[in-house]
Length: 158
Image (tube, rainbow, N blue to C red; front, side, top):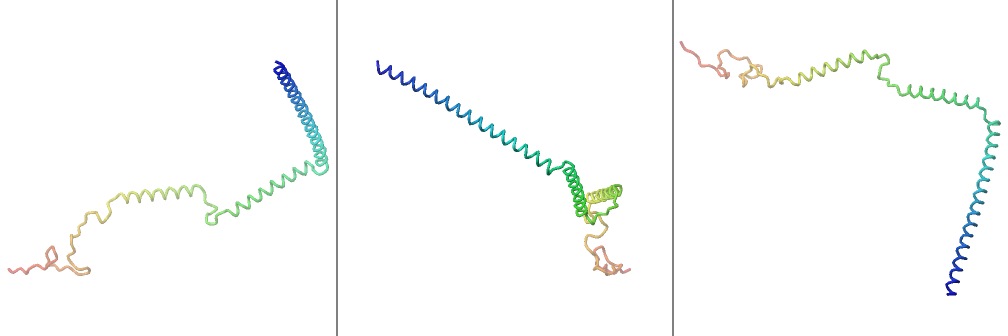
């Protein structure tokens, strides 16, 4: 029984010490956080002071606006230079939209004509009034007394 009592007593002491250690750790963490906050605030104050000095001494809002305007003008000039360099020399400058529309209409008409011609029967498949086989050699005159095959007809005797 004494052993059980001692065991409980030790457990209570252990729990009390763990609670105390937790409280000490919490207090140390709070102190560290407070010191970090103080350091941060001090750094922000120093930065604020330096920034004010720099702005008053080295920066003038009018100078900054003038610089921004100059940069904008330079960028416009640069864009104009790029446009001039990118200009195509083969494209006429004085071409207006009406001329382009007229040319487009003409090309469309030509395309339609070509499509109609493509749909028509080719000339080599069309009916012709030529004989199935040649009857004479090229460039040769056909004699009058030949049959339909180009052969001489027998002489007729009366």
